[in-house]
Every structure is written in structure tokens, then in C-alpha cells.
Image 1 (tube, rainbow, N blue to C red):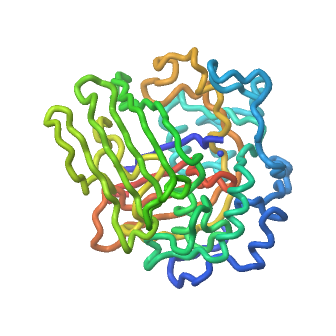
Image 2 (cartoon, rainbow, N blue to C red):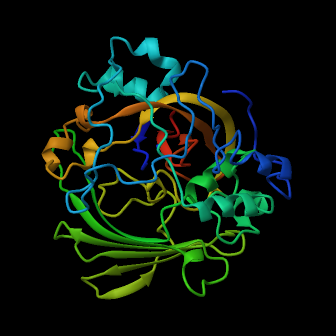
Length: 383
């Protein structure tokens, strides 16, 4: 049975490579010299494609658009644009070389599922100090034993800007820049087959260890999740401390149950344990595309390809929208979703012999500009 999850990038098959034979230094001085030239400071191809359908990266979106008011939410700099074309079940085969298997399956299964494709804008951008760290630390960064951690770095958000293995791409996603710290208010929607749902609301706090004063050794980041609705589980909380080198230390996690008024260590907050309040529709390591240790899978870097993915989705952030405007019976309201053509890294994860996980195979499509997972297809043991 196929399970498909799609993620909107926050800003965004050539050679098959395995994860064996990790080099001590994952980026050569020659590769480092390419950053900021033919590669962007984060490692993406700076040039556009030959067809002109993907533009060159020119620095990304670094200033708020005209009319931006934090009280009103994001301002859409591309609000006047119209779709170049719309993909439906009827014409999906014409675009299959730019689609993932899960996208094609959704188009074929649900008549309401369409994909409006707009002009591409490469908006991903980071502060200059982040670019400097990527270049300075990339020549020393290396994988821990088995790919289960990152060594010899201090502050970079992209340890492997020129990746040579699938697990390096995944570490770039896990460590991607999200600011030093943030507080975020989120809502998840476990939708039943009849279209009904109970919103799961939560407040999240995130901290990147390297940006905090006196960071603990071998610490990547901290995460706190507090459920605020529905009332049946409101007050439940999860605290996570993730390490950089997961060979040396494993994830530390605690849960708080308001009914018991107890804080307990929670080693189960990882891998395929069900996500809190999601009715079993999401695993713990599904969160944010993928998180946690990579040790249960063999990772293969399939290569890079052009793909139509959700990007620059300002319509979905419109504060005037109600949940019922977004959540529909089988999919979200596709009229609100913006798709663009971008280059992605394709990574395939296969469950190791003897390892346990709900997903036997996972395919990740990672935006080259932001290192954010833009789409993923997941399969259980039956395929």
C-alpha cells in the first residue's frame, strides 16, 4: 500500500550512489571554491535550466514584499501571476517525467486533485553569516560511523553542500536553517474518509544549539511541543534534545501527561511511533518531512531531477481562510496550492534487513535551494 505525504517548501536521475565509503572530508577545497560561483552558497546549481523554465538563482527573496504587514500575515509578491498550465488526470501522462509516483496516483484517484503550475521563483535565501559557515565548515564536515551523525562542525546549517550520498542530503534537510530560535503555532488535520476532522492545535518552540549561549556538547537542537486542542489531549507536551553524533548519544525525549501530572522519559518519541493526536496517520519521524536518526535505513542518492513541487504558497497562509476552505474530503483545496518547477535531489531509503519500521521504502524529493523535503512517497512492506 502506498502512502503519500506532501510538504510545501517554506520559502522550496543521473548517477546512483550508495552510502558506503564515506570520505574523511566530504567537500574538497575545489568544491568549496565553487560555492557562490557556479553553485549557490548553499550548494544548488546557480544557473537556470536549458529550457529557461527554471531561472538562475539571483540571491533569493531577502526583503519583505511591498505592503507587508506582520499583523496581516505574509504579502504575496506573485499574487498577480496566473498558472502557466494545469495538470489533471487527463493530461498527467504528458508531465509524468516531472512528477513523483505519489503525485500521479493522486491525480488518477481523485478528480478534484489538480496541480496549477506557475512561473518558477527561486526565493530561498539565508543570512550571509550562514553562507560563510557553509563554506568554512564544509571542508571539515564528515559523517559519523554508518552515517549516523555529523562531525567536525559548529554552526553550519548545510554540512554537505556538495553531497555524495543520500544520507548527506538527509542531514542537510534535518539541519536546514530555520532561524536560531522560533515559536510557532501549528495545526494538523487528521482527516477521516468522510471528510470530517478534529483540528490538532499546538505551540512549538525550537532552538538550534549553536545559536544559544554555552551550548551543550554534541547537541544539534531542542524542540518543545505543547498541545492546546482538542480538549481531550490539551496540555500534553513533548520535549526533545537531538544530538549531532547519534553514534555517541541517542535522542533524549520526555513527555508530560496533564492527567498524571508526571514528566516521563520517552524513548518511543522516534521512528514509527504514532504522532501525538494524529489518529495514527503520521509517525514521529514523518514530522517536517523527516527527523531523527537515519540508522534503520540504507540510503541511496538517486540523483537530481526537475520536478513540479509546491512552492511559494502564500495563498495557503491567508489569514481570512477558514479550515473548511483548506481541508477537503480527499485532499486539501488544490485551488489554493501553487506549484513550480524546481530541481530536487532524489533520495531512496530502504529498510535494513532485521530493522523494524512501518515504512519499508521511502522516496524523498529535496529542494536543491533550501534543502527542505518538498515531497515524499512512502510504502509499507507490501509495496
